[in-house]
Length: 377
Ligand SMILES: CC(=O)N[C@H]1[C@@H](OP(=O)(O)OP(=O)(O)OC[C@H]2O[C@@H](n3ccc(=O)[nH]c3=O)[C@H](O)[C@@H]2O)O[C@H](CO)[C@@H](O)[C@@H]1O
Image 1 (cartoon, rainbow, N blue to C red):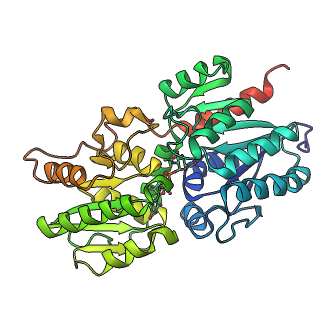
Image 2: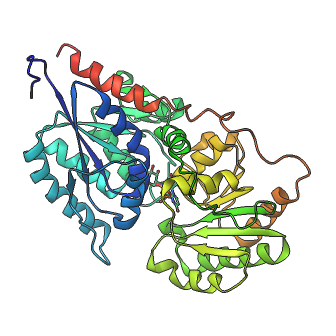
């Protein structure tokens, strides 16, 4: 495609499957939209239907394609197969120069493979994260490794992510260390804030624990029961509030129902769109989570974060105020109590932990994509 003056326009197709992909790609899409020589198109797979539209809404972005592929009870194989098949039509229609995928979802691996089959170059945002364990998180760890083999450009958030890619044989010249786009998103969300949004914390004078839990590995009856007991003990023993925005996953339903009626200071709420969720993180005294993105956001916001997993693909956060606590009820209670009872300030000022980036990732990504286009072939 060319401008009226004959200058070539670079066609970039951005694929989004889930809420975190929407949040982390929104800053990249906004940057691409501002570039005169780029035609950017957005394709949603619909892997997370409601959460995905929440992820996009606050950034005022719209999709050009919505494949709406999620079906109840769909397996990982079904999802991957459906995205792979549906992408051919989109790729034939759009004929992009680049497909941009983010992270490690079924949508990202299927779209990257489809692009590869069509001879379209793939740019991978948040490349190189590894736990080293194929089953942690499952299937995301393997998705990340496979996407690395398919991608032409790898946007690594940190030097350690770059190192992981190099160990797998990726040429250093194909890797750009740019920080994590989640920090760009966080800063955008702080500026996009609507002052009319109702405060989400119950009492600003009481300590607030923000809890989220959704990893597939944690949704077993044993682990859910441990976390449930820990939350019940914590709210009963401490003068704190717990707010738990829960994923609409049927595996969580019974736990949610029991916790909802347990205590007035323990609030089970529907997932929030990004801006109010960022507000809630900023109000929190500590965050208890198994989410990947929230680990990164908490680190930047200077919040202590207890990770309900045994490993993290984001080892940098452990240099800040993050602790791998797992899902054992006693471990959770001990770690939370220690933080709540600490006589010292439990926060760092926002932005002082800058290992994951300072908000310039999207700009670097767009610069590198455009440099790649003007490089002699
Ligand atoms: C452990 C793991 O493999 N996680 C992957 C997962 O994301 P991840 O585990 O981060 O997915 P989550 O569903 O927890 O989403 C986190 C994001 O949603 C926001 N939020 C959360 C709750 C809420 O009510 N409202 C809201 O807006 C958080 O601020 C955060 O930005 O997919 C991402 C996208 O490919 C990858 O980068 C991660 O590596």
